[in-house]
Structure formats: C-alpha cells, structure tokens
Image 1 (cartoon, rainbow, N blue to C red):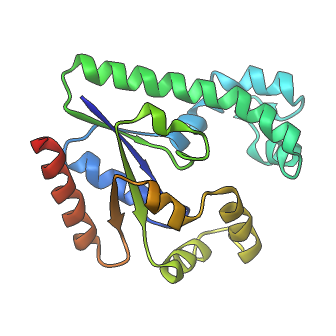
Image 2 (image 1 turned 90 degrees about the horizontal axis):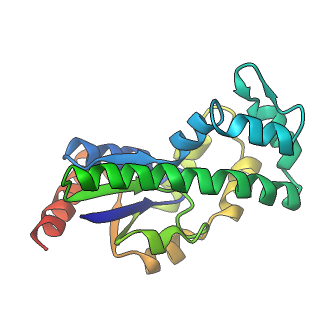
Amino acid sequence: MKIIGLTGSIGMGKTTTAQMFEKHGVPTIDADEIVHDLYKNEAVALIEDAFPGTTDANGVDRIKLSQAVIGKPENFAKLEAIIHPLVRQKQDEFVNFHRAQDADLVLLDIPLLFETNAQSRVDIIVVVTCDADIQKQRVLARKNMSEEKFAAILEKQLPDAEKRKLADHIVDTSESFEKTEAQVVALLDALRLN
C-alpha cells in the first residue's frame, strides 16, 4: 500500500482535489477534520488543562483558544504539542485499518505537511497549486476573511513555489473542475500501474 500525502497552501483547491481522489476509490482522511473532532472529544481536557477557560460543554471554544495562542509563540507551540501527536495517532489508525483491508492507496490530506515534517510518513507527495491571483480571489471570497488574515496564514505556510519543488506530483487547479479531475485520474492511473 502506498500513502499519498496531499498538501497545498490555502485557497489552492486541496479539499476539492482530496474529494476527487476519494471519488476515484482512494480512502481519504483530512487533518483539519481530525482536529475539529478532537476539539469535541479527546483533546478537550488536555486543552482545558493547558489553557484554562478555553473549553465549555460543547468542547473547545475556538475563539477563546485563538485568543490564548495567537501572537504567543510559546502557547502556540504548547497547543501543537498537544494536537499533533493526537492527529498522527488518528492518521496511523486510518492507515493501519486500510492496510488490513488491502487498499492499494490511501490519502492523508495534511495542509501543513512540510511545516510539520510529515513528509517522512508518506510515500508520495502531491502538491495542489493554482495561479496566485486565483488563490487570492478564492480566499478573500471566504466568510470572515481579510487581506491581513490571508497574509498571516500565508506567512505560516511554506511558499507555494517551495512546495512545488518538494512535490512528487503536482495538481494544478487553475482551470476547470474537469481539468483538475482529469489530472487526478491520470495520476491515479500512473500510481496504480507502478
């Protein structure tokens, strides 16, 4: 079984691309969704312990947690030290489950693949990219997004050009949905032949 690590900067179309892999038979797990689930379950007590007052009956209060970590690198590092091992554990369970099912491929959707040094845990790195103007247009169309917030997010991410240099394969989402899907299908055909 080969493990695909899918990554790409904000607004590049990574989530849509991951859905295309899934549509074509590749079991897929999304790191962001794992975190979302952890914030309602396993991570709640750990986060409350580290950042008192940031949780309630529904789990982690993302706004309060953001206030506790944004602009405070030591707190951000403390949060990552709690979350990253839990995410890794869920991904490992997912991979092991599908390995036992004799899957030929699985996909880990990891937005910060390079930034968290997760590339050593995958066999194939696929970077989703698009034209910078299209990226900006997509991101600024999102609810609660501003130029400043977009710039802050980009600052935390490895630049797109660097990601592309580190990729085994690139999926360009600059054009149509159909052209993107055709790239995914061609890539899967190639991976399944090897």
